[in-house]
Image 1: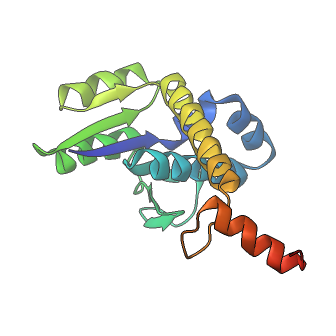
Image 2: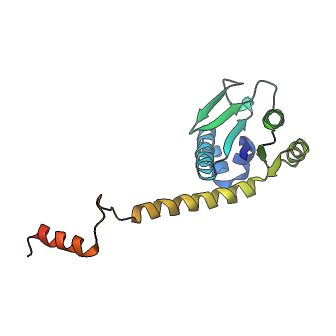
Image 3: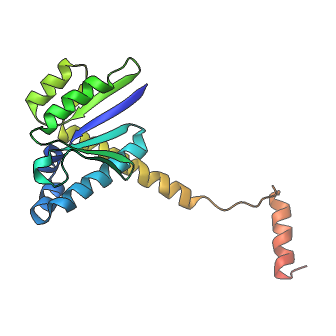
Length: 170
C-alpha cells in the first residue's frame, strides 16, 4: 500500500520548538529545516511526503517544486494550506493509498478525516521523526562497524598464513 503524508508546513513549524526558534531568526531557515527533517522521514519510512505552505508568507505564489526529494507546494493567492490539503486528499485518495495529514489544527484534522485521510498531530509526527532519526543513526553505525572483507573467501588459517607472509614471517 502506498502511504502519502501531507504536512501543513507552517502549522508544524509553529508546533516544534526548534523550528519555532529558527522561524524567529529566519522563516526561510525554519522551512529548510522542516524540509530536511521530512526528507529524512521520507527516506526512512518510504512514505511520499508533500509539504504545503500558505503562500501569503512567500513570493512566487502557487508554485510546486521538489526539495530534498520532498514535494513542496505553496498555495495560490487567496487559498489556504488547509484548502489545498483538502483538495489533495480528494485527488490522491485511492484504494491502494493511505493518506495522513500532519497538522495540529483540530478543524483541519476533522475535515480531512471526513474525506478519508488519517490524522497525525505535530507531536505524533515529531515522535515518529525521532524514531526515524534513531533508526538512521543505528543503520549508519552498523555500516561503519562492518569489517571490509576480501573478495575471495578465506578460512581463518589461510588468512593468518597470508598475513605471516605479508609481514615476512616464515
